[in-house]
Image (cartoon, rainbow, N blue to C red):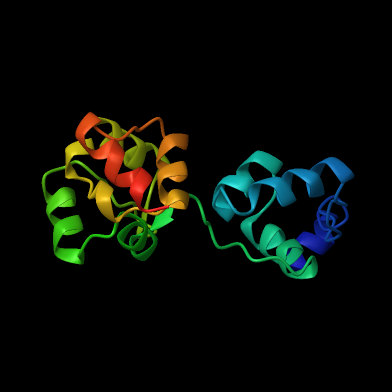
Length: 149
């Protein structure tokens, strides 16, 4: 550092941080739940440390919450953990590094394997949730769903 000061290099390297623009903050707010801090930092041309600091200053959580937890899927679909594990082993559902099931993976499973679902156990809220995925009850099961309401 002394040598750099003697050469006058310290003046060109400023220790002040780049101010956050409204657009930067807006991008951070919209992305913090869906992208990793590493990706956000790269997009904003900032260090991860700077992004973490801003997340803390704004009182946010940088926990990525895309997709569904295993527990959420177990409860929604009324299946045992062993059955879900079988679906994962068969490659029908993929669990990401964050231990969450992506919406894309779940959507593909629901469309390709509707016969695996226990339609007679679903309440109207679950049926509506499945309809959002584009999944409809098989012809023989449609009556059972209507009776549960």
